[in-house]
Length: 136
Image 1 (cartoon, rainbow, N blue to C red):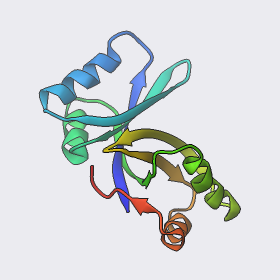
Image 2: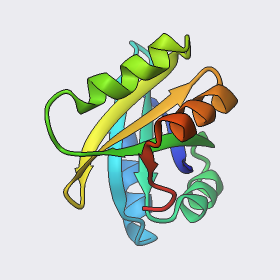
Image 3: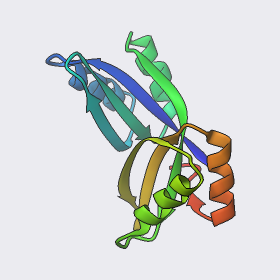
Image 4: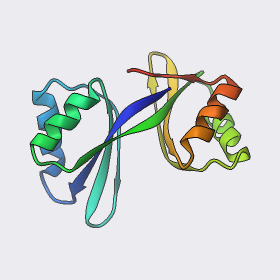
């Protein structure tokens, strides 16, 4: 029901992003989706990839600050309003979304998100019959 996501902490200075990307490239890690949120001092590079455990271990070994966590990956029909419907169902149950990003994968919309209540989110997903990706 969940997928593994890497969160890489990057100092906001020249070359830090390319270093991470080069390390992943050398290990033949395929990035499927990513997003960067930044502040004045650092950025958080969130990554969904084909081999998150190997990516995590490789980055850790290279001295990069990285964490690995579970996030939800819901698949949606690729048409307007579908994401709104899903997020509304969580809001109605008072489950907050910490962050969200989306992409298209094999003809489907995919919402990647983290919540403040993992168990309640799982119950909503089951009750609504939402489709999830367990592996990418």
